[in-house]
Each structure stands twice: as structure tokens, then as C-alpha cells.
Image: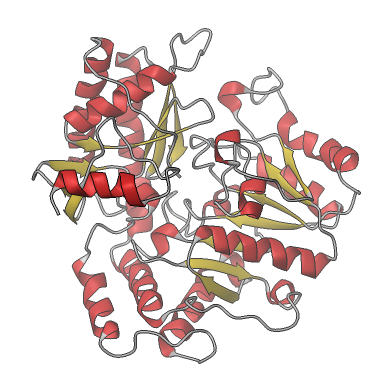
Length: 441
């Protein structure tokens, strides 16, 4: 198919709710490492990473070699039959969880399914149906996952019962108009009143992303999750850490983002980067919590031998290449470079994130902090024109998300900063058109 035929086929045969980045859809034809090429042969530096999914580089030869071998050996059996790839992956994951305390895994195909499994497990384990989620959050595209999500853009159709939303720790736009640390983390303390006034007092679980992805990489202060955890446990709930975007070392130095805050959750969910492009969902829990999901269940494609092989290979690659350290080191270099761009471009109001999960929030004025949504849309068009792919997020559509493969180096960061700098300059000069469509997940 030609590029034009691909675009027309997408328009004619996919749900109209499926959107594409850019005024003219970008048709990706091939990829390798940190680069992708479009149907016209143009090259792009990919600092979006398939929306935090390409964790160890596009078409990673070491990963793919193991996948090819497994594909020719055993392709599919479902969870009704035991198989080595699934068992080996579950055993490996158990050895990496915080404190080694989460040792029971259930595999699915996406982060949405992983979160559905976590919520069901929490409700069965506690006997309560009340869930506390966070504002600005994103947890998937099923009816329950959309109900958990704290952004109207991503809540389609009727909501499910039993979910309330606490304040997130959005320090740059504090909902209480306070300043950290003098605020005494009021947003976390408010979770107590939320539970006492909007639930029956005994909850099933609290679910949160350690760093909110679609929310614009909102990164809480060090005390936030410890305070919330204490409140949640005092009201009978368990702690679910949604690591779909923060897992597998991306925040630097730790396998899971929640470890940066010194909290050991009861359930961790993950997906995206675990498969490096292969569809996988993970719900891993403490044994006693997992046992709360009584009866029997199955997953037709969960723990698929080919996908499980890919995931185990990804974890092994991250270990062998010491990518947790690279996320800290190269991520720190990236953060410093973004801070320098902030000094140069008034459009950048805030730089935040952790490891190789960084963001810049664009504002029309640094004093008023009015969101620069139009300029952010223009910036994405400009980055495309300069051969760079980045993401977009935030409740106001004014956050640029940066999540490259975790095996990039400083030279890649230098190239990224140069292209982003040129793109910001182009926007300031009014040289770029606007993007259409909502944000990506």
C-alpha cells in the first residue's frame, strides 16, 4: 500500500475515535534502535519510545533472536497449560519486586487488563468495593479503567460505581494554592477527609501511578505516597502501584517507580516497556492478596510463550546492560539539558520527571502559568519537521513528554536537545502549524 492508501484505509475502516498525531498522519514504515523512518524514507529520532513502550530500542536484535527461536518452538497454549517461558518470567519478576514480597503474577495483554485484574483482586481480598484513585490519572480504556482515570478527555461512556478521586501532588499547580514544603503536603493529608466523606470508611484499595503519565509526568514530593499509604491502610485498603509507564528501571536506580518513595505496595501492575513492543500485561501481588481472588480464572493469551519470552529477554537485557544505572546517569544529563533550555525559552514553565521520564510544561506566561496548549500543539508539528518524535500530555494539553529507549547515550540526548531547541525557536517565530486530536497514552 502507498502512504496515501494507508491513510485512506485508516480513515475508512477504523473506528473514528482512533486518532493520529499531526495535521497530516505520520506513516511509520520501519524502525531500529532509537530511530524510526516514515513511508517517504525520512528519519526521526524517537524520544517518545512508542508511548513509553520501546524500552530497549526498536527491533532489538538480542530480544528478537530469542523471540524468533520461541516462535518456531511453541507459539501458544493459554494459561490452561503450564509452559517454561511463563514460569521463568514469573519467577524472575518475583525476584525483582520491592522487598521480594510480591511473588504471585497474573499475565494479560495490556495495562488496562492488568489494572482490571488488580481492582478485582483488591475487592475480593478486602470485601469492599470502594476504590480511591487520583485526579489527573490515566489507567486504561475499559469501562472500569476509564472510571479510575482522572481526566475527562479519557472518560467515555457510563462510569462504574465505587470510585472516588483524591488530589494528586501537582506542585506546579497546587490545588490548594500552597507551596512545598510549607504546605506540609496538604494534598496527601486530604485523602483522610476524602475517604471519610465520600466512601463508607472502609475501602478496598488506593491506585496510583508513581509518576502520572498522561497527566503530564506529575511527580510528587518524597512524603506524598508514604502519607497516603498510612491513611489508606488505616481504612482497610491495599496499595496498588500502576507501573505501566514507570516500571522496569525507567525512573533510574530502581526496578519500580514506587520504590523511589520508599513504599512497598500490595499489587503492582505493568505493561508497555516490559514487552518492548510485544503486548503484555502484568498484575503481581503479595501471596495473601492474590489468594483473595478465589475460584478459578484464565487468560487466553496471558503468559503467551512468545510474549513471555520477549519480556524475560527484556529484563535480562536491562540487567546485562545496567540500564537502571543508565536511566539515572543519562536521565540526569537529560534533565540538566532540559533545565538549560528552560533558561533559554520563556515558553517552558516547568521541568519535571525522574530518570528517562522527563517533561516540560509550556506556559504563556511564567507568572500566571496560563497553559500554552496552542503552542504545545505547534511544537509537536515543529519537532516532526525537525526529525524528532516526542509525546504530549497533561490535563491542559500543554506538556511535552520525553521517554526515549532506556539504552540511549549522551550523544542521543545532545541530538535531541539540538532538535528540540530548534523546534522551540521555530514556535517562538510562529513558523509551525497546529496539531489535531487529543493526547496519547
